[in-house]
Length: 119
Image 1 (cartoon, rainbow, N blue to C red):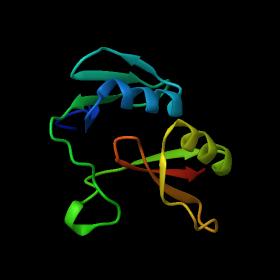
Image 2: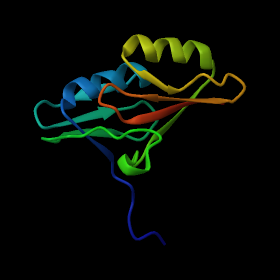
Image 3: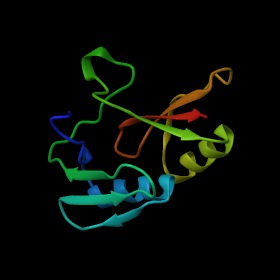
Image 4: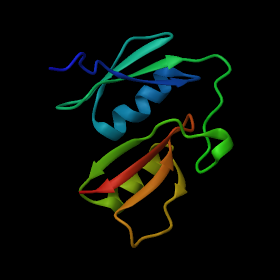
């Protein structure tokens, strides 16, 4: 028997509403709340939350002295189309040049790494 259930994954960031909006567009989610804590409800998936973090310093990938801390793997059907959409929303490529792999690494607008992974 599990001792706990996963409630929500929370990302620290400088602007919770803006980062929630980025992921809402990427994942077709709904943003709820204002201020220092914002929730993102994702159809058929785990919710995400975004928390204001004064003095936030974005992780760097790959950099052992500024660890990525965590990342999201987002499954997509069309890697090229998903990449174009993510870049249009403000994602930055970190390691997306190797087209032979089934995944590509990006940073969200606050600098958190995430991967688009072909299913």
